[in-house]
Length: 375
Image (cartoon, rainbow, N blue to C red; front, side):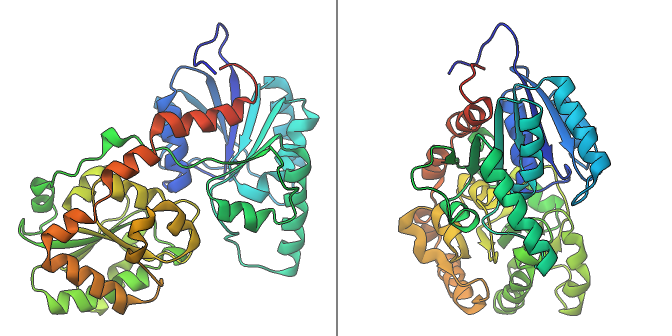
């Protein structure tokens, strides 16, 4: 497949919104990578856009909002008419099983390439009889109507489609692409000073939105132990909503030692203030945050869950512990704090840059969206 064409292809993408999150940031980077090489329309199914709107618009993406529901005939009709009238060459719904209805609509609208994308390894909603029944229905709609089903982990494939026919060529695992040029392993002392942290301090860091699944509780539990043990230790939490941790920080008497920065658009610089990356998630698809930390050359301690085992190199599986095993995480970090050379040896920057090369991984995603069409 080449990246040139006489007439630009016209693709449609669907997300809930474009507030900062792993999937939303991934898609924005994809658009920036191919800016100007195809036409892109993004439908936000929540009826709202989000904090990344300007970034998407600057990347040349037309953003449309349509408020949808489980079975909202008015919104479904609006989207069907849009799909039919715009004559898209391909459509990609990035809302996992909830893309089933839109795969069906796209088929009715005669869109040739219909891609369902799964950026998570399991469902994230609280189950009920009604929700589970609906989930099974839309999952089957994906299976029957998608021309490609793209997932970012083998775990997701097994969890969402255990009944699939072996060898079905529509199923593809496409790992996340990250532009390595954005990340450096050089420390940023100026940023440390701007954050009010001594340059000589030892920093344990976490990046990721405030969410129960991200297990910030474990981060704070570790912070209590680490800050009590080492006077020069600081902990940083960076990500949308993490400012909500401040009450817990104050209650634990960690104010000034634990920083909850909220959303930042300079995460690449924040990472350069870290000495160790701690990532105790309960569940993940393929974690952009951890990939970025590896590209920044940071040694890590992360959850011993299958999606993370699939994300990091096998020789570093010893750095994985149970999500709530704060004691084991502390002992691993203690070894790294006491031995700078060990931190250097545990860096896998070169491996991550090759494994998640933006050119290769984004091309795989684009080829899935385009089908057998030249882009």
